[in-house]
Each structure stands twice: as structure tokens, then as C-alpha cells.
Length: 290
Image 1 (cartoon, rainbow, N blue to C red):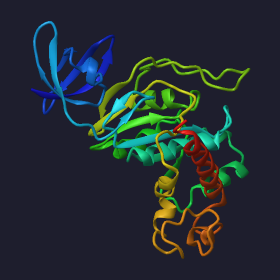
Image 2: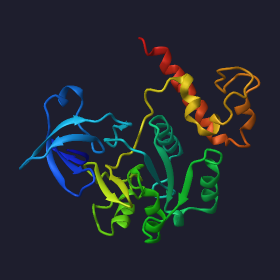
Image 3: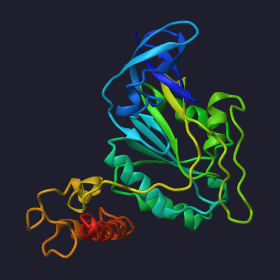
Image 4: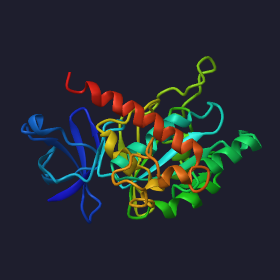
């Protein structure tokens, strides 16, 4: 039989049958200790049994995330509070970069819009103009957010990402109509949320799967060659081939179409982030063979 892993806890994997409603607890064969353990989101071949089935095969993965640990994600809801805690723009750009690297479509959810100043709302609305990323302004405590999100879940495997305290747990509770998990509390001292969820689980809803993922405070882009960085910025890609020089890195080269568009179709914020990451990746490249 074939199915999808919806949860893994303590070496036990819960597999939902393809085209059916049955969920079977399974153990993975020992061979996966060498090739890598199964993850929520994995499509597997398994043999059902009582009390536990056996996972015999993991189908090839579309992608894989480490934090949260999940495979075959098609869409990411990046949930960031505009206030309490204050938004970390570099962290949001890191998330967007990793989603591009993993070929996952991101949707930005700016939460706690009622706590944001007019100046901050304007900043958030303009920072990602030209990227093509969808940015939604929400209050996760409002029941209206359910109608906004449900159509976006259809036929997708969606993961909620973002720092603790951003409202992921509150948003999930709204979607499920129940207190599925403890809602994180923001520490007054450090202005960061407390980790609440302890494992990744796929929840069937809206014609797709929504991942209830552990809260985490950071993500670091890894495995990106500095020459390939420009390809992970959608606002740059549309200008591909229009620079004076082939292979232009959009940095110091003359006749660069990307630099000409900064302040127009490319926001200064995004170009500054690109330069920051380009410099960082170049430095890493110098020492990677040491």
C-alpha cells in the first residue's frame, strides 16, 4: 500500500492511506538508518499490520526542510508579527531565500496588524513590491482569517514558518476551530516567543495538508553558491539577459539592468539584502576548501 506520513513521534510513523481515510502506525525498516529517516510529508510504500505496520520504501522527495523537519512541501505561510515581538526583516528575507532555494511558494502573513503604526504598515506593504510574493495583513485572533486562508490550502502541502510569538499557534487554532496546542507567550524580557509545539504533524484541511510545525527563532540559508544567489530573487529573474555582461552578478558591473531598476521595480531593501548575502557567500566560498 502507499500513503503519506502525517506524523512521526519516537520512531513511530503515522501513515495516511492514499485515497482513503485509514491511518496506520508504522515502524521504518532498519535500512533507513543509513539512507535517512522518514519525515512527515514523505510518500511511502508500507505494509499495514497490527499493532504496527512496516515502511518499506520512501518515494523520491520534492524537497526537504530540516527546521521544521518535513518533506515535499509545496507552499509556505511565513507568519511574522509586525509588533510584539518587533519584526526581524533580515530573518524574513532569510526565509524567503530558503523557500526559493527549496522551490516552495511563499505567502507572507503580516500578523498583529492592529498593533502596527501607519508608518510600519506602509513599510511592510512596500518592502516586497516587485517580487511577486503575496503579502497578507491579518489579525490571527480574528475568525475572518479562516475564510481568507482555506482556499489557499487546496491541493497544497503547506507549512507555517516564522519565529515563535509571531502567531502561528493562534492562527492554527483559528483554522482548526479548537485549541489544538498551547499558544506561545512572548517573553517580556527578551521579546521573543516561547517554543510550544514539539513535533511536526500534517493536518488534513481545505483539500490539502497543513503542517503544524515546531516554533523556532532562526533559519540560516545554506548550500547556496554565490554565483547562483541572483537566481533566487524573483524580481531579478525577469531581467535575466538584459545586463551588458553575461553572468552579471548585479554588484559592481557597469551596464547592470538590475542596479538600474533599484528604487523602481526593485526595492532598495531587497537589493541591500542581496548585497549583504552576496558578500557573505563570497567570504564563505574563500574558506570552504580550508
